[in-house]
Image 1 (cartoon, rainbow, N blue to C red):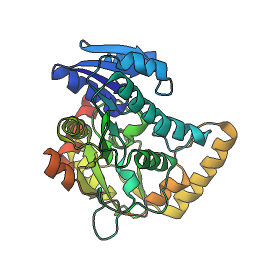
Image 2 (image 1 turned 120 degrees about the vertical axis):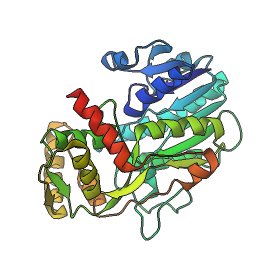
Image 3 (image 1 turned 120 degrees about the horizontal axis):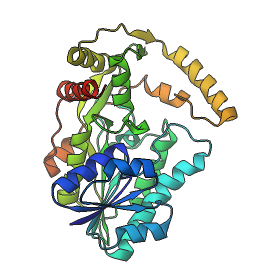
Image 4 (image 1 turned 30 degrees about the vertical axis):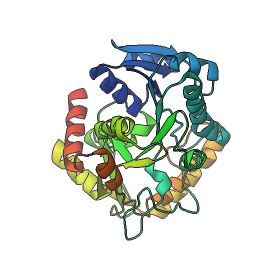
Length: 327
């Protein structure tokens, strides 16, 4: 098939493009940065410079494509212009879907996030969990707005299927959306020594290759108008670093940082960013997330799509090996 991919130079996008090419598809890859385009300048990929906010470039890049994956997003924790997050994550996605409708592309898989499901209580959150009353980041809020606009879209053209990855990690481009791998890399290199809070809050971590497999399964088997959580294993920060230590042999001491200290630092960084225009390393609402559990279930994707994910210990071992071979 001919397949369109937005966000083709992002963390998930790059791995998705490579998998599509390996299975024999021709990929129409939308990109903005010439430097990043080199990451996917491979046989089977046709590069189209453009932007998801530019409908003409979208139509040109998507022409004659049978299917489309929309992975492009503003995934940062802060923007000097917050409205830009919503333009990219909501309007940009709707532009992709509208371009697909005009061209006749049959199906679009849209990448969202499991963050919109909110923190968990006693039971894991899943696709049918009622949405939280508020969100910790504008990224999550914008993705929720997008899903609300797409809610119930089970008929018409194109068919739209949504996937909701959890905390993605693994070998690949060390972008802002690959923050878990960057943290693991910094620990292996001796530059990361912090544990937020007591280190026992749980989150769901999923290997990027499993997320790519989930995208392909959603395209093949997903039901139009439905969404599917693509998760891995629910583990704590302490377990994450235990697996990293075991895989790397590195035994650097870690220091637990009380959340109130992290909040103070985050507020300071946010104030500096308001003056300098440079993104902060962390923002207050992101710190507040650390005090919650984020236990997630992928049972629906497993039952309906045949989705499977490797366990965290195996995935982190593979990631550490990649990091050590790259140093």
